[in-house]
Image 1 (cartoon, rainbow, N blue to C red):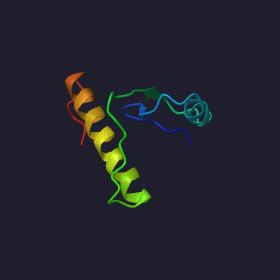
Image 2: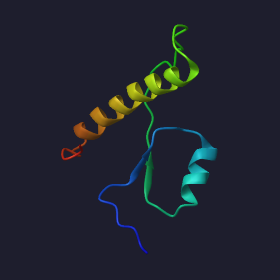
Image 3: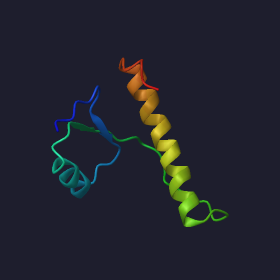
Image 4: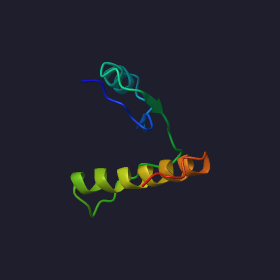
Length: 74
């Protein structure tokens, strides 16, 4: 069954391997990156650090997309 997306998937990574894997899905995607340090918080668990850093990166990407006119993102 074909999949129609309103927007392409955003890959917030510059990893060539991640791009290669996502390309295998045949879904439209765009690679974006943000310039933010990925500093680990020693008081958090590894899982909490991944979630915290991911939330920061996701928020920065969201703001950038809205600046580019993707205003109806939720």
